[in-house]
Length: 292
Image 1 (tube, rainbow, N blue to C red):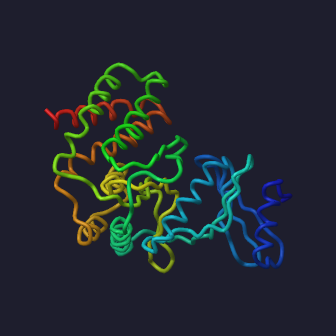
Image 2 (cartoon, rainbow, N blue to C red; image 1 turned 90 degrees about the horizontal axis):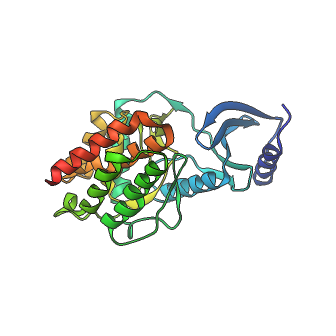
């Protein structure tokens, strides 16, 4: 097929970096958050390409490179990124196979390694995205304040703008005001987080090793990553057992899990609508009941 302008630019960058013998083929893989997905093949080698919102793709590349720099979790290597109006992100093509218990163990071990790696402060040097929603990451030394302002209250304001007021707002603001009560005796050490670790954002390579992708990185409480793995499923008991061997969780995680997942449920409410409203309200009420 004839290449669009941005596709021609991708091909030119690849040819500048390496030899691409033979013709180039583009295979459409469908739409995703922020744009379209493609498989680019040339000379027997393939790359994964996303096209769409340049700001989102630049933030994703930043997250992948940050995770790769820890040498703990396997991520697709970034080949190039263009943050222009017709943005595109090119990464290596990861050939994935079926998930397995052994891969889940290795993922648990790798994630523990990521979370235990030294990290300074909470937040991130740049803002990024959680799905298609802006995610603000202004650095701070105050985790509770960070989560209150840049996670919980931000999503509640979006919900109000989207017409979800009433009990959700009243009780949500009350929860935000009392948030420190969920952290009595617990001050999390900063960890680099994947940030969007649900079952669809990890896979198994043909050699049996796990890989993660589509991050929304920042430095925060590692419980937030673990909590999200429990929100939508896709992680079995072998994963959790392996993780806890290397990075045991504080007893208060059982309660804070609902807090960290409230952020994602509110984001889904803002992105996808009222189907998530009752779940958000239940989480808020459950957390308030733990405080009183």
